[in-house]
Amino acid sequence: MRIALVYDCLYPHTVGGAERWYRTLAERLAQERHDVTYLTLRQWPKGSEPEVPGVRIVGVGPRLRLYVGGRRRILPPVVFGLGVLAHLVRHGRRYDVVHTASFPYFSVLAAGTARALHRFRVFVDWHEVWTREYWREYLGPVRGWLGWRVQKLTAGVSRRAFCFSRLQERRLRDEGFRGEITVLEGEYAGGPPPSEVVPAEPVVVFAGRHIPEKRAPALLPALAVARERLSDLRGEIYGDGPDRPEVLRLIAEHGLASAVQAPGFVPVEQVEISLRRALCLVLPSRREGYGLIVVEAAALGTPSIVVSGPDNAATELVEEGVNGFVAESAEPEVLAKAILSVHEAGLAMREATADWFRRNEQRLSLESSLETVLAAYEEG
Image (cartoon, rainbow, N blue to C red; front, side, top):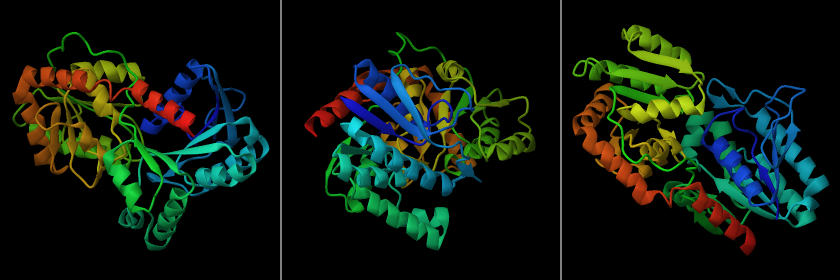
């Protein structure tokens, strides 16, 4: 089958859950001997070419800064959409399937337009569906309304959609989608869980982009409070972004320079080593479309702490008191209490977390999602 995957980012040139999903999906489809093309913006230096085994990478737009002040810029999605449109108008006959991320929306609209010429089938991934209220908060009254309208328009392009949580499935229906929605619960592409969990060190880990929605700075005052009870507690904060200066400022303000490491982006292997021995993962995000890092931590027997909220689908991955806790807020005292609860639960919670992963390993695996996606391609 001839497949075009469409996303404006490419892992590891940009890092995130969606980037990892499309990179891994492309590789697995190629391993299954499908003809795979990946349409994206160029993020690599001129003169070099990204290498994804068995996958043709096509840059349909120039290298552009995607974020400013932690918010997505408007220009790159427009440029990407025009690039996707031009490519599909010229080369759309090459593809049986165009599988695209819903965001940034202009690429979906481009696929819908070019489909009229070449009759390929369009599948759309909805990692997130934003409410009208969130659009207003994110972009202001006027631009937020326009963003929400474009999202609604995008929802009408394809009759086949994939969501990665029940939350996003409900929201897509609320936006008026009337086609077939398949929930893909599996994005985990790692190895099998260890035969036995290792005892935890008193280390709390955060891994993710330092953008306002992730609330990485919230971990620092929480650590300061928790250390009043657990004096040898340490923190490791991985990732980078516009909130990094605030993270570094709070490390200094709370006197945590000797207790907290914040090295920025590091290789995935280093994050895995850190998670394997960590007391817990703390993901204080207010907004998550899925929360793959929670699954990756559980695969190592490490519990997670996430924060309750209307936009946080990661809460669907935490069974309260089994593989972690859902904190009611990101306030320091609340997060600190959850951290201390994990510490008090000790090795029993680590074993329960590993057992939770084993019980859910199949449905959370990328392989299960890949089988579902391929079956959907065949069905049309």
